[in-house]
Image (cartoon, rainbow, N blue to C red):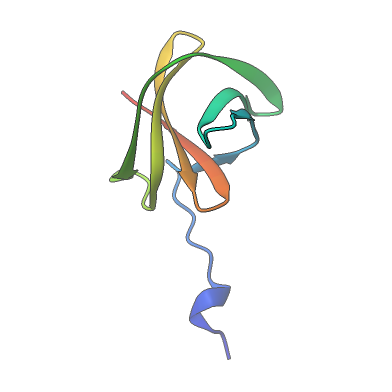
Length: 88
């Protein structure tokens, strides 16, 4: 018998990733770099941080609107995992 929580939903827009982040003494989290296809990319800048749902990928958390390699990207911290989606 297969249980519901055994099924992992795979959305092609939801890319889980490793993130290097700065945690400051006030409790703020600032992502500094992320990994994509085994290559680390520096986050050029973060322009917005807010709680939000990912309408394209599914899920919700803290959404960081970032520029990575000159491209606008949404980086989400969903509980304890990071994922990103490319904004087109």
